[in-house]
Length: 250
Image (cartoon, rainbow, N blue to C red; front, side, top):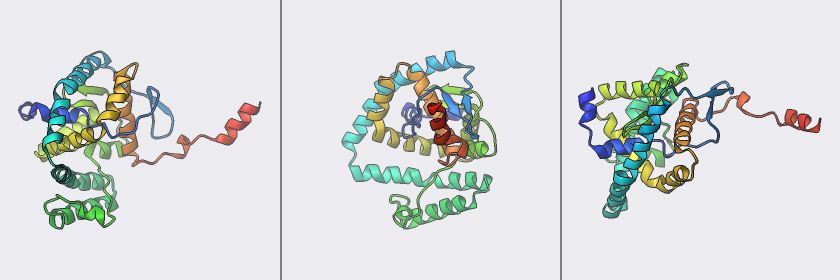
């Protein structure tokens, strides 16, 4: 497995570094738990994580950014969209399996249908034919499947080139990569597309942050929690404004 990882081209790993670029970012250093109670990020490796995170940011600026700019300059937009669509389509089998493991047969069936439709009507996935018919995509992976079954994220880790992760998600990615050799390439292509589309926002986010490491760490962990919950907040996450008003009046 490690031989396979070492064989990945640096730009592939650089793309994975910012796989979090499209996720929502919340203030604060605590990650809300699924029951609504604050949960502090488990970060026993913070010292080494900070070093790795700093290296990754340098690598992004020195290598990834110029490569992405060059790609956008020489690649026609229709070709960029086709590549993005193909990469997105190749995530559907992983979504189908991960959804089934959660008992989510609706999303598993939708992912299967999307893959079939986009592979055929979408010409090998170059077009999102299913999306045009109103069949929206909701990606799932083994890390999310484990999280939905109550498995915590575990220790936060920052991988060289790959970027923020945690022990649960990293284990899920490794297992998926063993079963599906194309998973890393597909993930990197999707990450590169997301980074290209959100580069200014992520640069502003970390560039203006007092502590970029905390911003990146909390953004990753909170977004993963958001994904595990399929974008839904529990009732305990919603503040009781009536109680707050009573407290303010006292």
